[in-house]
Each structure stands twice: as C-alpha cells, then as structure tokens.
Image (cartoon, rainbow, N blue to C red):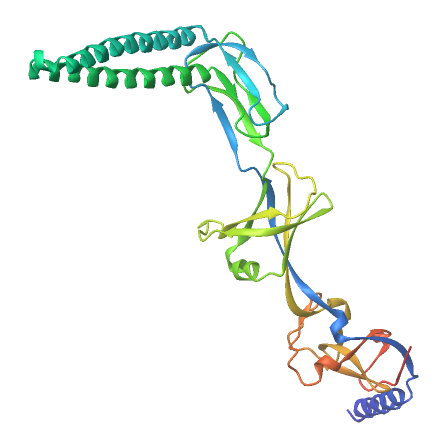
Length: 338
C-alpha cells in the first residue's frame, strides 16, 4: 500500500515538473468570427413538372396522322395527332347552311313587318303584332343557329390535337388508323418549362426551413440556387414529412424527375468539429491569451459534430482561436503565434 502511494506521488511530481518544462509551441490563430460556420440541413428532393398530362381525344374519329413520338420535344401549339375530319366538316357545312336559310327567312319577315308599319292604317293591330313576333322568333332562331355553328367549328378543331404547352412526349397510345372515342388517351406530355423542386422535409425541421438564409438543390455534383415557394401545412401521418416547393433561381439545366438533395443553411453560430479537442474528459477549444494557450470547455459539444456557441459569452467575440498546433497543447501552455 505504501509502495503504491509512493509511486503515485512520484508520478504526479514528475508530471508537474514535465508540464512546467513543456517547450513553447508555435501556433496559428484566427478570430472566432472567421471560423464560425453555417448550419447545414438536408432533405431528399426532386425536380417536378408543373404539368404531366395525359392527352385524350375529345371526339370520336379515326387517327389519320401522328406528328410526334416518344422523346420528341414540342412547343405550345404544335400539332400532335390528326383525326379524320370528314364528318365534322359536313356538320359545319350544315350549320352554315342553316344560318343562311334562317337569315333569308328573317329578311323576308322583316320586309313584311316594315310594309305592315307603312300600311298600319289598313292593317289590324293583331296582324302587326303577329309580324313583330315572327321577326323576334326568327332572330332568336338565328342566334341559336350561330351558336350551333360555333359548336360545329369547335368540334372540327378538336380533330387536330395540339400541345397546350412546351414539353416532351413520354408515352404514345394512339395508333395510325385506330378509331378513337372521346376520352381515350393518345399520348402523355410533360411540361419542360416552369420546373419546380419538391422536397420532403421532416416536420420537426419545418421551422428551420422557413428561417433559412439560403437554399440549394444539389444533384449530380451541381448546385442550383432555389427560392422557397410554399411549405405545405399538411404532414404525412406515416412518414411525418411535409412537402416544400421551390423555384430555381439560375439557368442550370434541370430535368424532370432528376433527384438530389435540398440543402438549406441557417446562420447559426457553429464551431467546426475539427477545432474541438478533448482534455481531461472535456471537449473544448484552445484560444490564445497573450503568450499562453487557454482551454475553453464547451459544455454542449459532441464529438464529431459542429458546436453551437453562445456569442453572448463575455469576450467571445475577441477570441483568437488556435488553428495550427492545438493537438500538442495543454491549458496554460506557452505559445508563440506565427
């Protein structure tokens, strides 16, 4: 027992002598403000299209022409599918003929009414009223026929299926010579303009997302700055995720369906994990106090993670953090600053 105690006392005295005799260590320093980093959070994200439409036939007709195929890029107004127009051309011609006949009847009725007004002293009041009624009825009939003409024209136009927006054809169901009925799909068109990035954000990070200083979409080693459009208020019950929508702010080429990571940065005061060292079971950082190194414990520090700092700590804004040479330091160690 006495031998063990003697050995411990001897070890302590030797250590004390060694600590006093430690050589001066050359170090490099930086102001605390230059070593603080932003907090970086991530979530899975992908590029989505504003419209991913299944284009369908609106009339019953036979496919007469197909102007596009899978993978083709189209512009708004481009002809995609041509349907047989024969029946609908005849319907439009019939509507036009009905209008001409109605106009002729109205013209005759108007002339009879005008003549009756000129001879009103020789015609009964009932007869004059009947002729005025005929004119009013024929005018209404003419309006109805003109509506029918516009409907026939619109039906004819539907035989030419055109692109409603700029996009890419991703599927084609229509076949040449196929008889289509209204509602049958002919092709799929994905819009390639006005793309958005959608991210699935854990609900417990929603406040951090809204408070972020900037956002990026990172995919295929390329970063695209994005702007938050909307964070939905609906939380998925199973996964606990909320959908956030973003619009790109630069011209980096994006593709629909492209996946990556949404990265957002918070301007928190964080100290890089690389600068944190462990002394006597405590994690902390070394700062320069004149010609001495001072170990500053960081109670909130966790190994391998950036450490949040409370900048309200007295004198923290004046810290000169030791960058180089810290691994050999002990508290109170003599230093020379390069």
